[in-house]
Length: 158
Ligand SMILES: Cc1cc2nc3c(=O)[nH]c(=O)nc-3n(C[C@H](O)[C@H](O)[C@H](O)COP(=O)(O)O)c2cc1C
Image 1 (tube, helix red, strand yellow):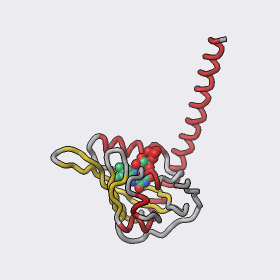
Image 2: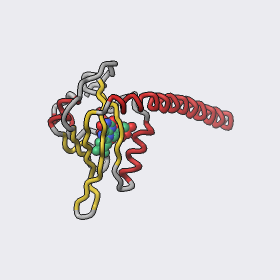
Image 3: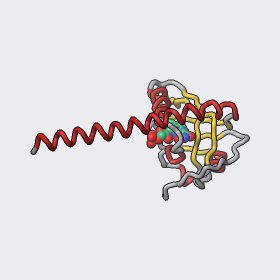
Image 4: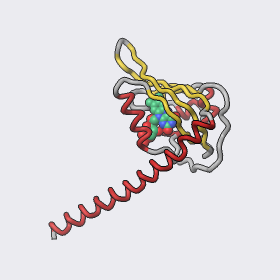
């Protein structure tokens, strides 16, 4: 599937509940009609795909780390997420994700989302921006350290 190019335009999600389920690795196993409508995909384009298919680049990585840490601990997670539609537009949700158990064993996860309130979005935008900036700087620094390591290796070889 072609890479989605984000455009700075919101898509209206103002009613209903978006539901999706995944396996333990975050591969989509179920998508309700609202999910398809709001994300802009057909059901068969979503089933079997990694849930990061709708990941928006404005979302800091740490937000998803928090999500997975909670889920791996057998707990539930909720938060505000900016998602990417197939047409490049974005939509904001308040998401609640819970583990799904069968015979006492966790077999996957289910997420339910309502539209995020404007106040919730306004609250997280500066926070996510700050976290994203920090991640970019950390990435640059990590790349520098890697280069220094490589140079050191090279010097040792020479
Ligand atoms: C049930 C469930 C629902 C998820 N819903 C979303 C979602 O709506 N948007 C999103 O970007 N990531 C969602 N994720 C997290 C993704 O699996 C993924 O971790 C995230 O998009 C970051 O991508 P990455 O892990 O490739 O960095 C969900 C995960 C689970 C288990």
